[in-house]
Length: 160
Image (cartoon, rainbow, N blue to C red; front, side, top):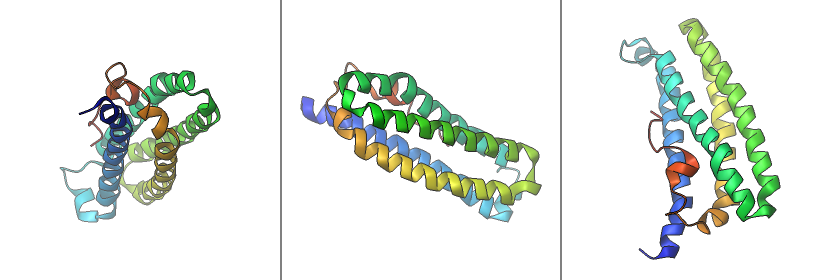
């Protein structure tokens, strides 16, 4: 693999992490939509919400603390984009807080949790796509050896 191919791996890695989060959210929504699965002792809304929420918060926290400051130094023209992405992270964190509260309240609020998850899915998809388009070139310019994906985006996996 050439150095250029390795560098492009950072933007691919970001997309792969987003894809894992998308899949985890789909699984969470599917479990909520299937009453038999939601009642199953093996499927706990509270545990699944907590796992997904923790993975997403960890990913956004790492981006805010590491990737975005680095990109702002390397590509100052991205500052407005990065500020918008960080503002999105705050909006998403508030939705996650509501989801966790509803999940903790119990199965009676499953419909309300579903509504919040539907809204979250729409916001996340827009956020992920915009982020992938807007910062991919700047990520591709970084040295992936000096700045490993786990350092920039958080550990892979753990979203399910």
